[in-house]
Image (cartoon, rainbow, N blue to C red; front, side, top):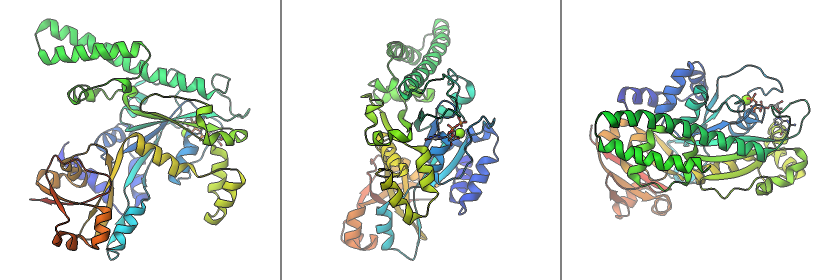
Length: 399
Ligand SMILES: Nc1nc2c(ncn2[C@@H]2O[C@H](COP(=O)(O)OP(=O)(O)OP(=O)(O)O)[C@@H](O)[C@H]2O)c(=O)[nH]1
Ligand SMILES: [Mg+2]
């Protein structure tokens, strides 16, 4: 990662005013937007799906944004993006020991793509957006509304889910075919063991895809994973199907498997009712509970969605106590201390010496990091330490 760009990015995420961040993103050209996403260390959840399924409605529910939703095509093609704080009770508790400092929650990026016509996942624009996604959220239409036509004239979330999953695997198949074609030419010209390994792996993956399986199903060694990581295969990404159900189907929200059931690895299904929830979000906080129970809704979508996404992406949160702020950071599972240091700043990664680590609950018991250190409760960990969910970390580094 170019350190200049990294610094530019860090500059953006530490800007105090979130509105400035949205403005910065939204004034970017699509290309600059993609470049920025590529270098983004914050996890992003990308909402996508066929036209008029309720993606922007869900985006508003998840982020509190108030983007206009329309029944008719408005020609808007640019994605919506919000960097959103993630509530975490553990941060509150840690911060209570240091309440003179500022409290900074972890953030995730939500991206809401324009509707994709049937068969259009393979178009360059959508492929580029989808490839940058950490977690894919497919919004499927279950609601019935004669004013909002479905492109296929039939409301069937199950069929649309199958169709979208097929489009994801097909796009990977196309990428593999075109890479194999090039690779075979190269290998004819000159022997190359690395190229042979890649070819063999791609042939295995191709046969999986041809059987209709997603690449998530492939059991890959870490080396194999590395070998294909630059392809950013779509059927390898974790996938949540969010079914936007009709009002009459609200009881199904707690049992989405009755609409669509999948035992596939890395795929989860959840349901919500965009229309009702959007109405509830218009209310004052105190009134929300009453209306939720009136509609027999157990909870709002946002916390449920975050939990499902974190589980699926095996995301973890660690905490830092800086000079002026107590901060939470969300990263993917299997993140080393060195990588975690880089999430904070490239200089900390470059000059990494040691990580001083204590689980958040132990820290609470000792009352302060200083006290825990004096009682030898803080561990010293090296670059390769696998950061655990709930770790409080102080990074020692040299400039
Ligand atoms: N009846 C009903 N209408 C809904 C529901 N969710 C969304 N809508 C309506 O569907 C229309 C499209 O909603 P959006 O959230 O903009 O859908 P979208 O998927 O972002 O649409 P595109 O970005 O144009 O593909 C709006 O008129 C919404 O009010 C729902 O649960 N029930
Ligand atoms: Mg939309």
